[in-house]
Length: 177
Image (cartoon, rainbow, N blue to C red; front, side, top):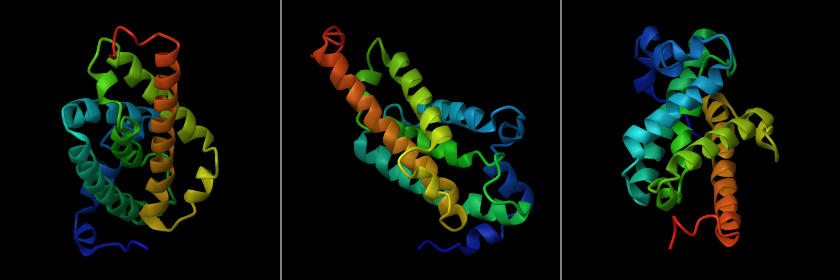
């Protein structure tokens, strides 16, 4: 099991909490997780859009590690278990929703894929189907991030299934050869 590392413990509380909440984003009263996910879509579009598969995985692994550590420390400093205001977890997993979807993202319907990924992710993050809810019981930052990671993986699977159905139904003939 992952342990909490020293580098995060020496950061000032203001830095830890602001990174974990994405500054003001986590403090939005209505649906902070949705706003964190939307920020994740922007993050994906800026930082991951042109990365290849390996680059996306490596950058995502680094982001996940940092998120686990920061979210863990933020929980401790806030004295709360996985509070809604911590949205770094939603933010960092969004790029994983689109693993393998680059061929469609770089077409005229890329915006549809982004929107579908966002909506599927929010659905899976809120409903937590297939035992995802139990992942929140993992200790510390691992529990904060694991349920969102599982929702992102489910989102990626759903997008791929939807793309295969759309392809065989003839809806993608203008976009994929």
